[in-house]
Length: 163
Image 1 (tube, rainbow, N blue to C red):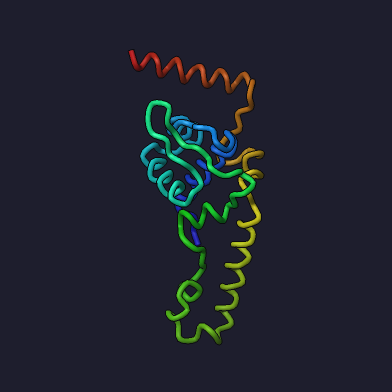
Image 2 (image 1 turned 90 degrees about the vertical axis):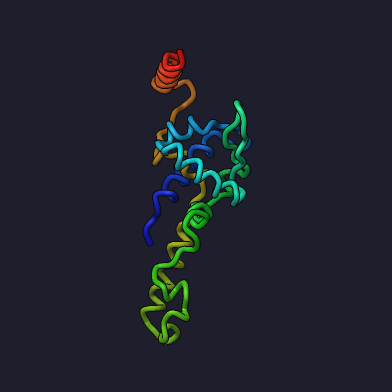
């Protein structure tokens, strides 16, 4: 199994939204910028996350994405499997009928055990944990002078571009 770019970006998006909190509207542009996700890719990812019930997409000038569940209730497994489908390591695990010896094969049992262990590890990690640690999305603390300066620079740069 290899994590897709879409799954990686979905995890970044969810970490960022988890840090904002459940019910908080966060603009697509902010998420794309802070989580370093290309805007066009984020739009597609958001559709998948919304379809799975993790986020709501709000349209309009004050629109953006809203986390619908508490971060403690969303596992890494939930998001990964939303983006890539059920995890499996070999075709015989996903489609036992693809192999004539699946049920008597010692290697099949190894693939099944490895898949189960990976899924359990991902199931035990929740976004409440991920949002508290420095990870794929930098942490900006409220009142952090560097973060405030960064935000001010972005606003100033954006307003200059608009004129």
